[in-house]
Amino acid sequence: LMTEEAKSLVAETLAKGSYPLNDVCGPETRDTAKIVEYDELRKLWIGPFVMAAANAPVVRRSMELLGRDVIPYEENSGNVYAVGALGEYVILGVFGALVLFPPTRYLLKKYVLPTPGQGPSKEARDAGKFASEVYAAGAAGIAIARVESG
Image (tube, rainbow, N blue to C red; front, side, top):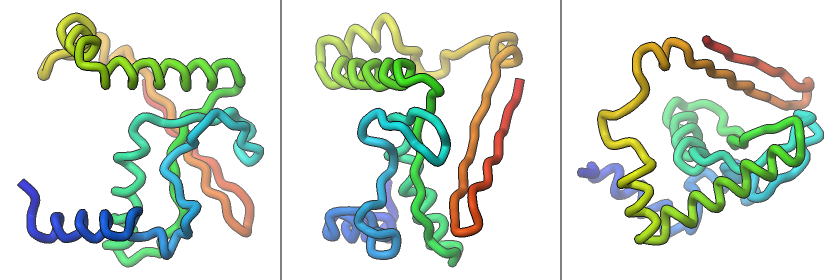
């Protein structure tokens, strides 16, 4: 259930037709790349990131609630090779189309996707790896932080 405050924030967002912070970040604020494109700053081919639509508004709202300066924020998937980035883009689109179409969504849920509570074994989790790079660009230049585990 949504609290009254959450309902009013959603109503405010819908009434504006976009994010409540677009007047601060500018109308060009985006969550993720819309197509595959080369990012000169990061020297990577970037494409849409599947969780960006959920994550980016939370980050913007958190910055606002903490009283911090609101900065443009987006999340992308990155690839050194154009063909790799294009492949990720196509796979994301195909999967999205399959999920939207009820018969294929049913088959995916029944035979492909994990059920709630189902997941990898402890051994598989312990053997897993994760890497993420964060790029911050400003007047002073660019800073890159890399996080790795596994």
